[in-house]
Figure 1 (tube, rainbow, N blue to C red):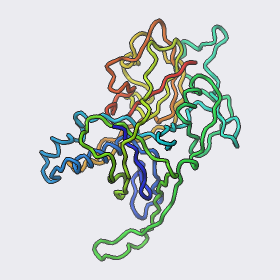
Figure 2: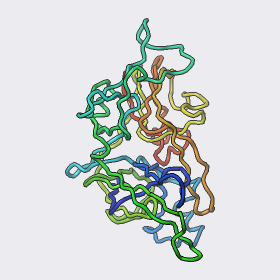
Figure 3: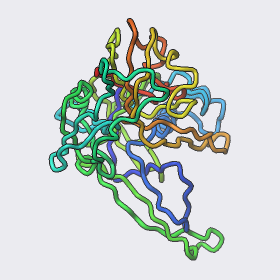
Figure 4: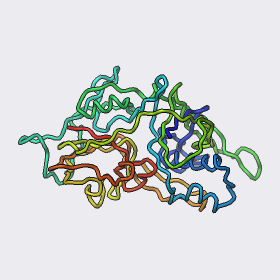
Length: 351
């Protein structure tokens, strides 16, 4: 089922930094949230749908598994979407290799492609190049968002228009005071600031869910910090594009959701674990790492934090001979962790 999630009021999706009242930083919201946030909300609501006794640990594990084994649950997303009539359209993060060429119109073009004097392809480099260093930085604070159809055009090398974040959602800061639980009064010097997300009308999150049956067509569930509410509705969403088969000789890999690699921005065992045939990484444009962790309520402890390549990162490859994504990849994901939950979702272009 494809679920459209719409905020009843506002949402709070914390990042991975420690936060409590009196800290010298604000609690900032991430949007869209990480797939781990969505799987937690959906697994919790599935227990409600199935009428499982939350005090019966065996029954809970039988219904939704554990933090390390989510059984047959498969997620794709979450993606930022906007309603367009009776359908929804995905909006994806600005590619990391994009250059803004017209600020008022939010027009983007791909940065300089890898090149060399001989045949136009950079090969034999000890490490890939970071693209766009010759171009003037033009991204806004949050970058732009590209409608899926425009992103496909961008990945083919076209100049396209993007949407600023404020056209899709607003950030709202609210202040509060920590409480002294012993005295039931406000704690001295415990002022804090939390940032909430208010999606614009018709804007929400889309997540593709497989493995959970018997859900109602619509309803309300709790999601994110403070257990804020989301109205969910099953919708008809366009399918996630299948990768070209075989892959183009020169192709780009755009990450629509964060991805984890053991060697930071690349897999330690090489790219062969994701591709059939010989492919060579030529260049990459990678954003700042994102730390993804969480808390295991069942075990009462924090989950290990991992550093993920952020959504919007772009990798340039060259294939020698016929190459394709491995068919055994879970949901076609290019990631070494979290493929079943929606990490590592990619779109492929040609350069």
